Image (cartoon, rainbow over all chains, first blue to last red; front, side):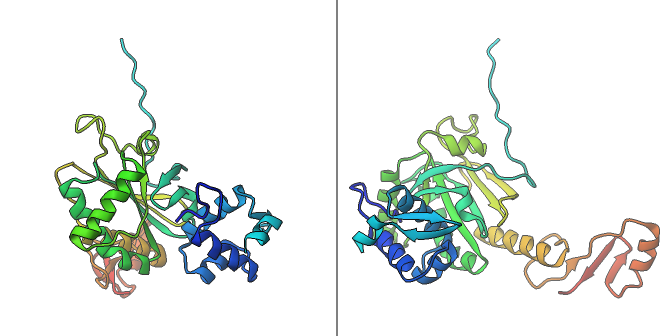
Length: 72
Length: 214
């Protein structure tokens, strides 16, 4: 499911992904394991969340941005 | 003379072409499926009878496919809204929930990449294609069905089992093979190996046709 709604806010799937990253999951596989979402959907969602400014990538790991922290 | 552009279509053994497309579950890329087997399949149109029976049948085998690390991705030249309405209708009227994504290929970008439109059948609809793509993104099987013939799900499951068995054990699978049946040992390539083969303990009909149980 899309992780960012047309109004730019995280959807429930997006929030679950952000919560997983907050909890320490930082790779698509780890996030998939925590959220139970299939890997293909996690990868797609991560792209959206990065594009919307909620996550950033550092050395192949996903981290919350300040905007991402603010919505949690 | 009018020139027509014929794109090079992907063939078995080649890397499947990357794409990014809108689906009922957000924008997906082929590379999002890296590490999983993928069945990319096209259907002619939403709200049509044969396609509806196929989608229910795909939904039925989806758990078995997932047990085999295999995902499903549908496609037709319809909008996301049409897909959503059809999927909701199938659930409401037929009691079958479609949980895999469907590409909305209105601009025919993905269907053109994969040769899913056969103009002699229809210039606007995709024929029934099945592309089986392995975890490394290599195209391993291509099936084409005409508009009027629904696909056989057991054959699709059988192909997945056969490909995964081949990869795991370096063997081939004979005609009408089903999981658990004896497999074919790859034939030897030298006369010396051929002589040795019949003494290797396999069930050999001759040096080039040997079976073994896994």
